Image (cartoon, rainbow, N blue to C red; front, top):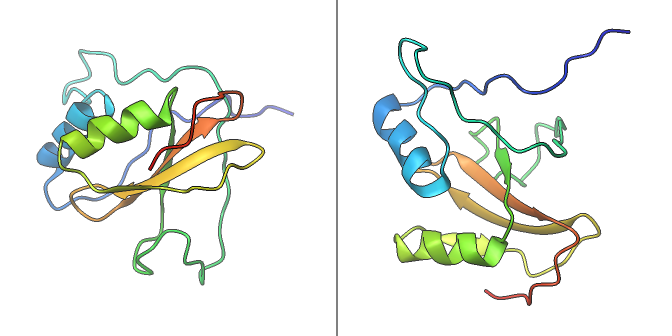
Amino acid sequence: MEKVNGIGGFFFRAREPAALSQWYNTHLGVTVVSSNCDKPGWRQEAGPTAFAPFPTTTTYFGDAGKNWMINFRVRNLDAMTAQLRAAGISIEINRERYPNGRFAHLNDPEGNPIELWEPAGRDAPLKA
């Protein structure tokens, strides 16, 4: 059976697309897509990607009006959290360690939920 081999894009509506693209670039390092495709887009590191529909009643994403949440893998959750907080961005670290790693939650400027995931295998102390 032929299968897809990765996510080629993540597209969503935004009130201010250019400003939101710049926010993701500045704070999370996601390269802004060129409008004429002359520059390569963001290249992610190889690694696992969860693809998981949730029930319509889930509260995991926060705002019930949001139908999606993106999860970004990070190398060091504590360093990323410190960087975001230094930029005045509110972020909440889940204090529980799961078998698959650690998580934190924030929202972009348009209220879209973002989850950061530090895969298991790091022995960094838990900080909040």
